[in-house]
Length: 406
Image 1 (tube, rainbow, N blue to C red):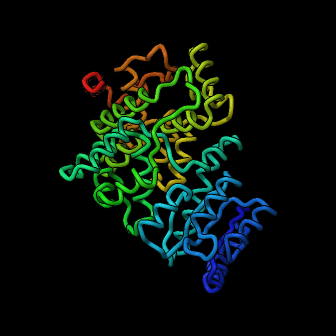
Image 2 (tube, helix red, strand yellow):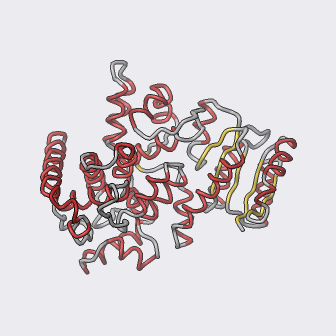
C-alpha cells in the first residue's frame, strides 16, 4: 500500500480529506497532520511515499515543510494542495514541490496525480537513484541560455516569440517552464503543451522573477568533468531531434507532444551528469571501451537507463503522459504497422536515429545503438531518403549556427 501524509492546519479540511479518501482506504495507508512540525514528527517515526501539504500554515508553511522533507526524505513525492494563488507563493514552492493542486480538488484528480507520480517513481529500479531524481527541484541551464534570457527580459523591445525561442533552445529551461505552466502554480486551468503558449501564459513579469529572483534556472556546473559527456552536445542533439521530428508525417494532434518529447528525450543524461557523475562516467567509459549502447550499460549497472530517469522526472513534474512515455521508451518503442499512424514515441525514436545518422557518431561520445529504421517501417520505406536528406540539412544548419555564435 502506498503511504500518504496529508498536512493542513484547518481541521475541517482534514476531516473533508478523510471522507473523500475513504474509497481508497484499501489501496492507501493515509495519515494526517495539522502542522509542519507534526508532519515531520510522523515522518521521523515511519517512512511515507507521498506528502500532500497546504501552502499557507502558521509557523512552518508548506514551502518550508517541503524543503525540509526534500532534505531529510529525498525520495518522497511532494505535492502542494492549496487555495493560495500568488506569484510569491509559487516562487517559494516551485523549487521544492513536484506538483501544485488547487483547492477544492476533485477526488479523481487527486488520485490520478498521486498514482501517476508513484508510477513514474517506480520506473527507476535503483533506490539510491530514485531518491536523487525525486529530490531534484531544478536542472542545470547553459550559461549562454541564462545570459540570453536575462538580457531579453531586461529589454522592453523583446517579444514573447523571442523569449520562446530562447526557452526552446535549452532542455532544462523548457522542462521547468512546462512544469510550472501545467501545474496550478499560477492558477491556470488548461494543459499547455507548447513553449510559445507557455511563455504567453506566464508573461514577462513572472518569467523574469523565475529566471532572476527564484534562481530556478542555475547555470550548468559539474563538480568534476564527466569524461565522454558534453552538455553542449546534448543540447545540440536535442534541438536537432526536435526539428527533425517536426517534419515527420505524424497526426496533427500529436505535433506539440512530439516537439516537447523530442527536445526532452535525453534529459536524463543531464540528471546523471550533475547528480550522479561517478556512475555515469563509469557507464560512459564502459560504453566507449566495449562499443555498446550507453543505455544498455546503464541498465546493466543500475537497472535503469537515462531514458527512465528522464521520464521519471518529467512525470513527477506533471508533463503530459504521452511525453513521459515517449521519453521513457525512446530506445524501446512499439513497432509501427501498416495500419497504425505514427505516434509520439515512434516519431521521437525515428528522429533520434536520423539525427545520429546525419551527424555521425562522435568518437568522444558513447554510441547510440539502433538496428536502422527501415526494418521497422516497411510501408514508409519510400520516404526514408527524403527524411534522411531533411535530417542532414537540419544538422548542417545547426552546426553553422553554433559556429556563427561561437
